[in-house]
Image (cartoon, rainbow, N blue to C red; front, side, top):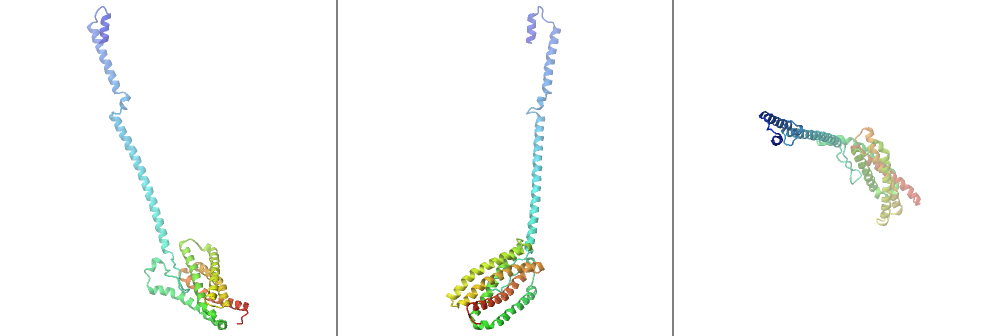
Length: 306
């Protein structure tokens, strides 16, 4: 309208009705074109209030949520598989550990054998008769071997008649040898059952146990000898025999206690049932023999006639 007014002012004659109609037509056409372009402009589609943009945002959110959910499900599945694997390993290891032999070292006297060493899975179902039936043959064999101690005592009867004090320490020697060997047997059997050592470690373990037995024997012999002489009134030469015998006896007991379990494993025998009583039997015989042989040499060194 402003354009129309200005045109009327500069023209000598007012515009005709046709011109005015053309002008109005152009004006409405321009306005309509601008509105159409505004509606179909790409900016309208990226408007935040556009329904299309809202649907696109929702789609993107749904996609992100789906991706996160898939990742969470994959993580859960992976962790579940790992947990199942660990459970299977723990169950397998538990069964193997339960099936292995468990040993309780003999305590106190030398002739105390190992405690219930049967397979734990079967032990609860076994009767007393079945347990005795499995053990009595080996005990009979070891009982027969212990009869050699009577032969040794009979062979050194003359020495005992001359030096009766030697008889006082016979139970002490037998008990100490059994206790020392029992510690070695229990330690080695426990290590074998736990898988800490294998047959390949036999010589290393035997050497270690024998060395420790020698050290313990030296310490105990240095204690028992003076105590027996100065406190109990035992003669000096018998006290010397006791002090010298302890290191050798402890070494033999530790050697046998650590080697017999490996021997049983190599031969396919049950070390929990055999090793401890075999050790006590062998230690009693060898320890008593060493005791009297050392006594003869010590008495000769002291100038005593036997």
